[in-house]
Amino acid sequence: MAGQEQKFFDGFMLLLGVWIGAVAGIVIFGNFVGDGAAMNEGEEETSPLSLIDERIRPIGQVALIGDPDVGALAAVTLQTETVRAPLTGPQVYNEICQLCHAAPGVGGAPVLGDTTAWAPRLEQSAELMQDHVINGYTGEAGYMPPKGGRLDLSDEEILDALDYMLEAAQ
Ligand code: HEC
Image 1 (tube, protein in one colour):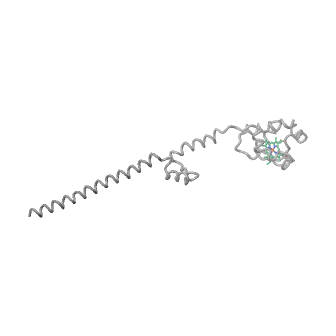
Image 2 (cartoon, protein in one colour; image 1 turned 30 degrees about the vertical axis):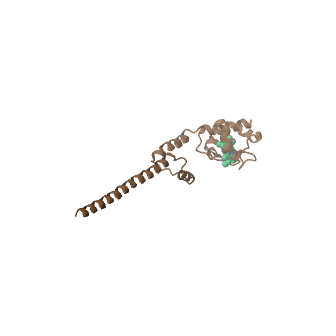
Image 3 (spheres, protein in one colour; image 1 turned 135 degrees about the horizontal axis):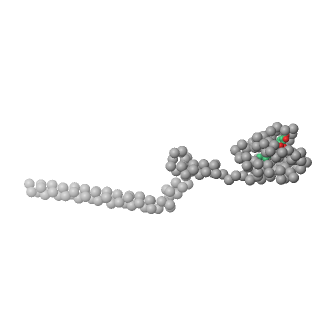
């Protein structure tokens, strides 16, 4: 009887030992894995995973309206649209008017600096000329579209371009 109890006790202690060993093993292994993870976090910049991330990052990112990040972006876009710097006369001429008014002149448009072509036009009133440029007209030579086709530009910008062309016509 005493021998059997001893045997049982030995067996029980052995089992306990194995169990404690297993638990200790799990705890140590867990710490090891945890350390590994912590190390990755700390070295995010240089870890191979983040390097791969960097390489396969898409060129653009989709921004959805309503996204808080997009608010700032939209504000910037709106600002550039509403507060764009007005174009100067020469800028407007180079961007639009020269399409027809540069030599040799398209569709009968008087060429910039061609004093002969401009002389009879300079005899008209300034108001009529301004009206022709802003609202467009069809003359004897051809069709001049309103604002040269750029209705998004302000009257001032178009009139600055007119001034630039008239200076060259003198
Ligand atoms: C699509 C071609 C085209 C563009 C772009 C264009 N013009 Fe003209 N423009 C003409 C033509 C054609 C005439 C001549 C019409 C006529 O008198 O028969 C003309 C005439 C004029 C005249 C003479 C008006 C008059 O009363 O005699 C002025 C000034 C003028 N354009 C200014 C401009 C300015 C400023 C721009 C740019 C904002 C511009 N044009 C862009 C085609 C164009």
